[in-house]
Image (tube, rainbow, N blue to C red; front, side, top):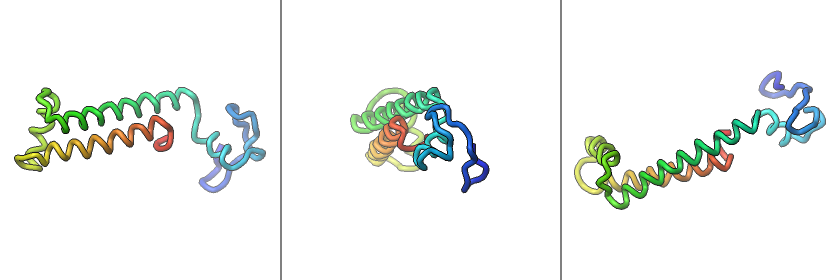
Amino acid sequence: MVANRSRFVAGFAPDTGYYCEEMPQAARLMAVTATSTGEIEMNKVWGLSMAAVGLFMLVSGTMKSEFAVYQLLVARSRILWGEGNAVHRFYQVAGLIVVALGCLWAAGFIWK
């Protein structure tokens, strides 16, 4: 549908029912980026999976969990962060960031 980065070529967008030259700019961009509903559904799956991993990091960092996977992560992080609570604080902050990005991805605001 796109001839180059700055110009659209006339073509039919089946998901909207319009020709590209007749569509408003925002709808034209959406027709080019969102190719299928399967792709959108997978973005929801991967976004929610990412948010779940971030939630695991956040909760484990807050509770200083004894779960084996978290302890392996902490053991590797202690090389950089040293002894103390800095490792757990790092996993809290990183988990919060991963949760936020995962939710934005699942909602379709980023990484479409």
